[in-house]
Structure formats: C-alpha cells, structure tokens
Image (cartoon, rainbow, N blue to C red; front, side, top):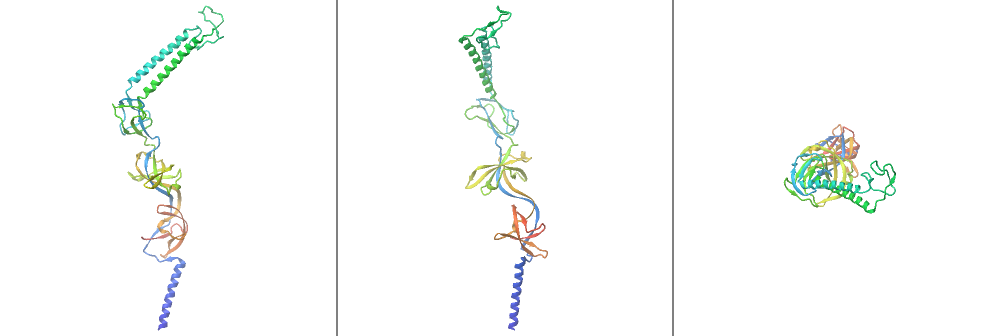
Length: 371
C-alpha cells in the first residue's frame, strides 16, 4: 500500500513539473479574467512635449500711442474696442499757436527771398536771378537796352563785401526755410494718427485734459493687432533639448476646449525663467491657424509640441508592455484563448500609445493586466 501511495505522489509531482516546464518553454498562460485586451492597429503618432503658456501679441503688434508735444486734448476719436486703421486720426491737440508759428515762418521766408533779390539787383546789371556771383574774366554781352549794345565787354570782379552780402542773404533765406519746416513738423504732431491697424485696447487720456510731453510721452491709447499673435509656451528644462525651430505645435485655450489651434516653433529664448525653483524656457509658437481672430491676449494655453510624426505605424497601449532587464515583452492572445509571451521592439511614444517596430502583426490581440 505504501508503494502505491509513493508511486502516486511521484507521478503527481512529475506531472506538475512537466506542465510547468511546458509553460516555461512555450511562454503560454491560460486565459485569465484579470487581463484586458487590445488589438494591434496602424495609426499616425508622434513623440511630443506638453507645456502650458499664454497668448501674447508679437513684437510690434501692441503699440502705445502718445503725444510728442504738450497741450490740451481738443478732440479724441477713439473708444475701447474700436477698430482702427493705420494712419487714422485718433486725437487732436490744440494747435492755434502752432499754426501761427507756421504762418510767421512763411512770411519770414518771403522776406528772406526778397532780400536775396535786392542783394543781387544792387550790383552789376548782368547779375540776374539765374546768376550767383561774378568772376574775373567772365564774358558779358550787353542787351539792346545797354549803352554798349553789340559790344563784347568783360565783367569786372566784385569786391569781397559785395560777395559776402549776397552769400549772407542767401544763408538767411535757407535758415528761414529750415525754421518753416520745423514749425510744420511741430504742427503735424498736434494730429495724432494710428501707427498700426488694430483694436483699441485701452484709453488713458480723456478729451479736454492737458498733456505735458517730456522724456516719457503721455499715452493716449493702446492699439493691439489681433491678427498678429503668438503663444509663449513654458517648456521644462528636461524637455527643452528636444525642441527645435520649425516643429509643429497644437494648442487649446480654456474658452474653446474642443478646438485645436495650429502653429509651429518660431524661437527659443536662451535665458531660462525660474519660478519656485522650477526652470522653464520660453518657446515662441507662431500661430498659423485661420481662426486666430478667436484668440485674445493673455489667454491660457495647453500646448503640444511634436518632435517626430510617424505615419501608419503599428501601435499598442503602453500598459501592455512589460520589461525584463533590457528586453520588452507582451502577452499575445492565441486562438485557444491562452496568452503567449513574445519579445517586441518599440519605437516612438505618443501619450498612451507606443510604436511596435517588430514582434507583432496588425490584428494581433495583446493582454493588459487589470489594475
């Protein structure tokens, strides 16, 4: 009887060892309800970096318009939210004094011009409005009204005083002309025009106020061109090495959570931004989305920057992969319902998806351990 019992125990032990050896050799396990399944399929994926940021006007798209002269604001033609075109008049400063200065300078120019004519007419008759100065040996042909009509004579040399007087009158005319141009420019400052097209974002000076122009020009309005916006994305220092100019980017804003806006990396600031011991780098995203008019400055953004896009590659969930040393494995479901352990080689990752380079075929079913 003891022999029979011993034989049964030995047979049972050998059977268990054979089953275990078979499992270890073939890498198979029975179907278990503790596993979920996923199908290997083709998909477009790309490795990406996630960042947060905000919408900002590009350089030159936000302009504070001020005054270059002092005076009372006579007219203000802008309100917050108004659409403004370039060179449109925004405000006018009282300018009667400037207009009087221009009129006076114009009168002075006429007087200076007359003075030049008098200086020329005071000397040799051959010196006309078309002739500046005489020179020794200059040939002069008298007109029919001259006593020397028909004779060829030589123009005498002017003395130094004569030439100095003419030069002085001409210089006085040029100075008066320059003064007139100066007063015209000053008068133009009284009419304030929009330097860019855009929307009035703020108004800081009211009609009737007196402004004083000094080192800091008083601001009348702030204009923003809403068609020239960008996204400043803050990328962690661990990811900044993978960001390159020209990479594709997608972003969303809180007010349109289901809408993605497109763009691309335009610039990477070389200096880091450190907040609460966290090091980030400012990455400028150029917006090339046709719906850019929906955006407003300072909107918060969630940005995805794509390093490499893979078209039509086999993907599986990242949770289906297990690691043993330097190797990666998945459990592949067989026709019998059991799972077979197979080694795989992976590539790019995007979110929860992982590219499978080798080891699986499209349509294979892999097991995922339930949590």
